[in-house]
Amino acid sequence: MKEQLQLLERLQEIDNQIDRHEKDLARVPLEVQDIARNLVVIRREISEIEERLGQVQKDLRKKEGDLSTEQEKIKRSERRLLNIKNQKEHNALSREVKLGKKVVGEIEDAILDYMGQVETLTKSLERKRNDYQDFEKRLHEKKAEAREVESSAGTALTSLNSEKLNVSEAIEGQFLKRYTAVKKARGKAVAELKNGSCTGCNMAIPPQLNIKVLKQEEMVICPNCNRILFVKPENIPEHNKLEA
Ligand SMILES: [Zn+2]
Image 1 (cartoon, helix red, strand yellow):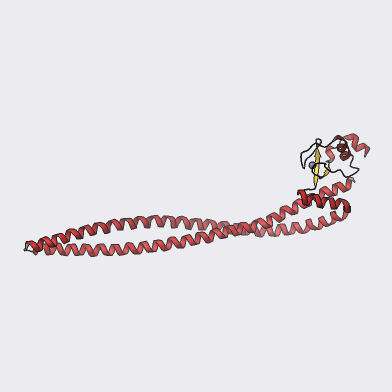
Image 2 (cartoon, rainbow, N blue to C red):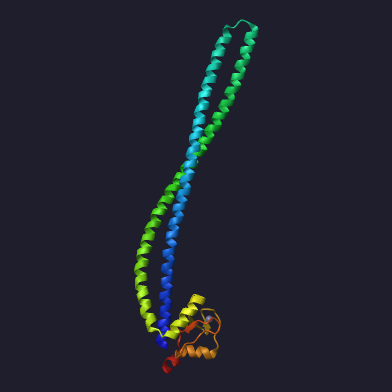
């Protein structure tokens, strides 16, 4: 019986390790995907900013062209003003110059606004490009981790599964059946008895059962959670060992 309990305990250890490796195998590829998705999003954001920046720069150049055209026009009008003797014509052209200067002021405001936008967009573009590089680096590292996990988990699982087979074969059918059923229902089927309590559910075990567990002569089930109880050798009192 003692040996059977040890085998069940070992089986649980093996199952825990198998679960851990399988979780890693499932988790890391998802993390790779997650980073790759982020890269796609950032790439799209970069394209959008580049497009907007290109448009603003184009608008800016157009306004700069408009500005020099307007300024040329004003210069020409001002030169003409010097030679106009007719008061009425002079007034009309003066008004035109005044209007032209107002337009120039508006164009200059627009140019300042565009320059501000160019600066903001350039900064956010730089930030996004840095983010992209960071995520690219993380993707590279995560992929390396994925390869590492895949190969180490693969090796470990091969040997764990073969040990599981051997251990399972050595366990009596009824015990294995109970182990499998409780594992399915509770996650873990074997629990250590410690200080009179089941460590699976933390309930105190009746003294009569406690003694049976220490004797290791039959399989004892926790009345509360149905887990198979075992005790570590160092927690077995001397007199129990002598009896056994
Ligand atoms: Zn329990």
